[in-house]
Length: 581
Image (cartoon, rainbow, N blue to C red; front, top):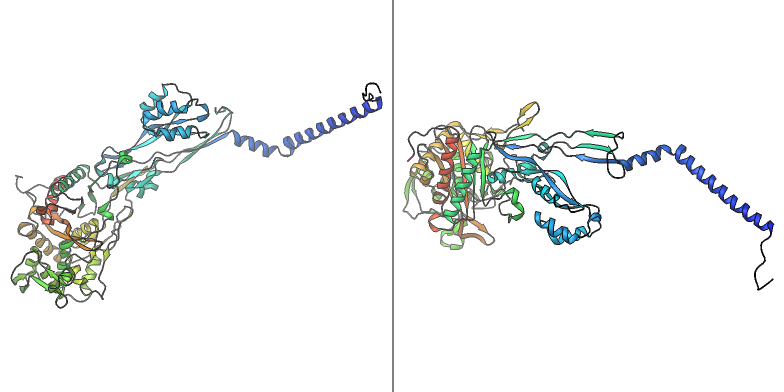
């Protein structure tokens, strides 16, 4: 061995190595052939299907959302073509530049957009549901990685009915109001698009293509009258400003059908700008809010007394006192004043009063004396029949049930219920109850949707419930008493020029954490017109009027009622008996 080098391999060793390499190559070719055979022959169907799945693009085809109209065909909610901006982060060189130059133009959160563009995600929305011309303007800037896609956008031509219509989320699904309640009908049925694409996302002309068309949503025709709705909202705004109240809510109900002609309140909101709202107007107090109605409840009490024959309107109660005790010495103890001692609004000596006088002048003591002659359970039964303390079944989500406290162990609850305490109702419940008085004693379920528009025509959304509550003659007498209340009683500010109106005032203290608040109350008024054959019931609730001269239902709520009722009667074609002054 020279210089320590290893000996050169012999011919026999070289041959062995060549044979080994050749064997390995043969085995590799055999394995490759076997794998090709397995893939192309044995498992060809599975791999073909896998490849097809990789080439297929499957997308949901969104249906066109149904539109919403008022009773006269005026558009309340429409869907228009919009567009969304999105980005492919891998194609963007400077995320900060895109966030500042693109995101800022459309009101996106710049810091969040920068973080999203740096997140390594495949797809990032910059801003959704934009105007088409705004998107085109941004695309013309030519920034790489910024794209758009068409997307529908829900618009509300008038925001005055927002508390009835509700709103949709960014994906176009109803999340409040009629948009939510009728989501299944409005939303339609989505379709499906299956398209075979190449690696660059282009459709393969000879590839698989299957499209199932989406079924568009149904249109809703509501019972609302847009012009009356506008007037109702304006009247409520004026009422809040005049009385310095927290809020005002109102309902206008068509007597013979139960159709809600207008419903809403202040504070309100604009569904297209809800991101900037404080949320105070989102809920619907007319359907979801509870309050104690005060003297308005006397309508149910007196109707029960007349309908059972226990009393007649002309019956005289001698020496009706200023105050009445439900248990001994209640009036002498100031702490029991609300619960055991009931007083009239004005101090007076014992006075002879008919049942009619008691109602027209809203005597608390007199009403309790009338109630005390009713058989046990009678008032509770009429409260139930009038629909107080139970959902009306109106086609709106989240309707409040109401609260009725007539526990037999409560010594004062029956007297309280007779004059509007121990009873918590919603404005829509009370409007429907007065609708029964206006409709010759027949209660009709209130509702907000008049018809669903299909390809075959229109159909009613559901059967409307109705039931008799009081006798027609009782209802007629109650309407006369309600008319006297407006003409010469506590509701004179509710008068409508040219029409005979009937109604009832209500003033109740607000219940706080420590009992009833002396300085806070709820003022309300509900009435009907024309009194000889009522067409409309209007309910108004003003929560927390703070100006001393506008603390009662007669001073705070009755003028709002008058404004709404006058427009409602004219919208229904009623002609005043004399020119308005």
